[in-house]
Length: 334
Ligand code: SAM
Picture 1: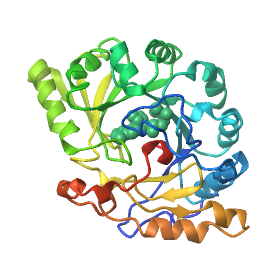
Picture 2: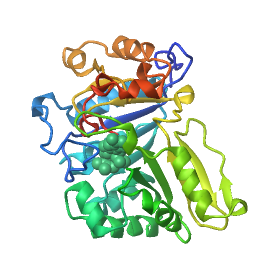
Picture 3: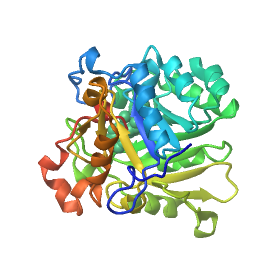
């Protein structure tokens, strides 16, 4: 029986019903916006949650009101025991979803179907082979492109995550939207966020406003629909009339959605992050390994969540480099 969701409710009354679990800090791509060129210092294997620990922590969250779990990373599918983790988590009364770079996702289609995992987010930042190779520092564009088509054909609910970077891929906004003409995809343009070593600055960010300007320049006002966002949705959703799919903008930096935030993150080394922008973390793995209850630790982490972007209330504050004193996205789990 689900207990009342009290330990997961913060001081602003936000209920945290959505847990994102990073399965690994490893990845088969090296995206420039996600990790530094020389990689990151990986946590020792003994510091990474085992599949039993992942299940135990996830179960505690579900018993306290979590209804959705998304697996992420690093690249979740490169973890050797990902199949076993998925099968175990699927026994919990929770909606399961995954975010992947799509490079090896074709190997998991039967498993996803077997456990009822329907929602798959695939990252793709350019429709141009060379640009994709430049941003991921690997040459897998064709594979990822084919795998997106395959997932759609196999009936999965597919969203494509595209991090926009000024002067790099912002000229592809319409090309991405045109993919939704015939395919039931959702394209999600994500504002570039600052993390350790990703050479972020505000000038590289393509804002929600700029995306919409590009859309207005290309499509006439009558054919452009603002869709109703789902509760707790981080994305602002749109559609071109008559198109099979839709598109959205995730404006974490210029137009955050903190009021309705229901997310909490667990890193692969068992640290809770109550906000993506938070520069601090709460260790869950040590008390778990010491046989202590993790409930008070979770409660404290949720209770200390700040109102907006972990205390960064204005865009000006992003200009302070200390505000990005946060692990690389690859180690947090996007
Ligand atoms: N490997 C998987 C993938 O590529 O989707 C999952 C992990 S990845 C860290 C999750 C998401 O975070 C991806 O969609 C990626 O585009 C996004 N991401 C990473 N760094 C980002 C940044 N600096 N700003 C915005 N989004 C970022």
